[in-house]
Amino acid sequence: MARFLVVLRPSGPMEAGAMLEALQPVLQGLNAEIEHRTPAHLSAMIRGGGESQRMQLFADVQSKSSGRVLELVVLSREAMGSTAPHTRRTFEQLLELIEMHVHTMVLSFRSDRDGPLPAATS
Image 1 (tube, rainbow, N blue to C red):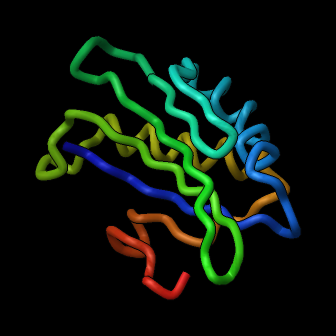
Image 2: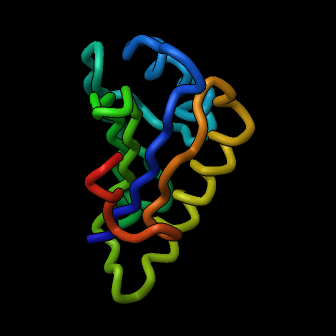
C-alpha cells in the first residue's frame, strides 16, 4: 500500500475549519470528491485510471506543542516496492497545487523527502 504524507503549518493563528477550507482549490485540482468532513478532518476519494488507481486523501488538523498543523495523507493500493508511480505523481500534483493555492500555510514536512514520519518534536 502506498502512503505519502505532507504536513502544513499555518503562517499565523488559524482555526481548524479555515485550514481545511484553504484546501478547496487543491481538492478541485485533484478532482477529489469529499466523502466525509468534520470541523477538523476530511476524507476524499481521488479517482483516475480505474479501480486499482483509486486513492484516498485524508486531511487532519492536529494540535502539537508548537501549534496546529494540517496533515495530508495520500493512500492507494499501489505497491511501494514498485515506487508507486501513479500515487507518487498524484502526490507531486498535490504538492504543486498546495504551492500554487495555499498561501496561508507553509510546508514543514513531506514523507518523500524527510522520511516516513515527522519527528516527535513537531
